[in-house]
Amino acid sequence: MIRHTRLLLWRIFAALMVLLGMVGAVLPVLPTVPFLLVAAWAASRGWPSLEARLLAHPKHGPHILRWRERGAVPRKAKWFSSLMMLASASMLALSTAPLWVKIGAPAMMASVAVWLWRRPED
Image (tube, rainbow, N blue to C red; front, side, top):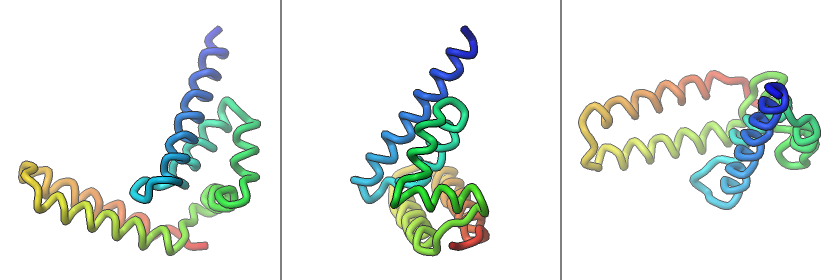
């Protein structure tokens, strides 16, 4: 019973991540590949056929494989992510958010950007 429930939860999580990835394919502000990376990870724990389909996908499969093998992120994705974080921080600075948010969120984004740029490239 517990094994069945665990498998069901992994499948629901994987399906949710695929759904968010599909939304990201349509909306330019939402990334696709990070959601598919998480979907493949979750599918590897409870839905091997979905994992195989994600890895075999002609467009996104190579990105998932490169991440798994080397933790590689394409340069184009690094630039896009960095620019989106900069735009978010700029909008946040102009907002009425509390000062701790205006300082904390950009600091977190900057640390993510540093981590991202230290990843290997394709």
